[in-house]
Image (cartoon, rainbow, N blue to C red; front, side, top):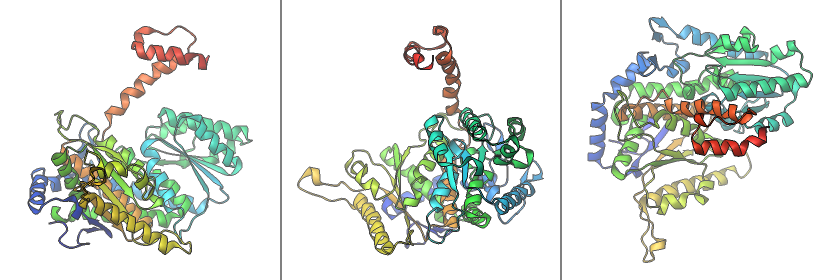
Length: 493
């Protein structure tokens, strides 16, 4: 059973302590039996072996192949995919060796095309001993032009390179931002030849990238069996390698690979991502929890909760499961920010709010700073982390109701020995694996996202109505949207 002794639950050097989940031995036994009835081990093996796993889109799910540094053969429809992946690794390594004199990189993407790379670039930026080229990495994500304005104020056009990341190479926001960056380069004297040298693409649709004007030798592929929110391990993470070197990027992949081996090979009762999934499922069923918090006590991981929001809520924010069957449980609302800032924000709700909100605390053993006071700062940081977990679980009684803490608020503690590329890769893969496990347990396809499409479709006629000088066609919109269009229309005439 979990928590027989501290540190016994270990994956790729990451330690899980679930003692404050307040789950009894009998409850753990029932949860493990539930996982066995869901044939979770068989389903995990199906995913790793390249079988159809994304059932709605009839695709394998093989982001794990992207970090298969051992190069063991992995077959899709009888074809070993590893040689193609190795070619991409070689091309990334070559580019890392060739890039000199670049001051700025603009990475253009949205959603899964940017959350993982931006998290990794920021997480590794200021760690002691990190080998960095110290280029300015800019991430153009939002269609709001103010974001590009900030980038253009900082970047030097003549020494800027641009990475356009889009699986389909048809995403509206990404292409509009890419066109704006191309216009900026041209307006600052960039010739057509220089422009060709400055633009790179990462996509599963190389034809569309070429039509955009990107040369074939600057196009890095990835594949339909890689979901966008699971794609940082592909050439989508090119900016990580360019900033910190190819060896650092491979170390990032190896950390994730170590979790994959653990996830596939370890029995349920010691399998860290499966146990994390079972604990969250238990709290949902026992307390009807609808929210979940993740609190990294590491400023370098400040973007981790945002990455996790997409991973969990885009994967599992559904009311219908596999086989079009309505489901009882799906993704809770995921939120979080770094400790100790978060303690002065929403921890009041976590401690004394009426709803029970499970928490994952993430801590790092070694200090992540080289200032003279690093050890003292880090000790106090971790003391706060441990104290908050204790207070949530144990609570405090008082004759004054307002000063009572009910306790029994569940949490995990995840400890990284240090924050480097290997353990960062392991951390991200740990939560990806938990997502896979949750999808199996809930009976949800974790690898499609039909819910994001309706708003995209509706935005097209609304955009036309805003920019068109003609009267609004009332038949296309409900009355509230029509009134809003009419109010905003003068801003675009």
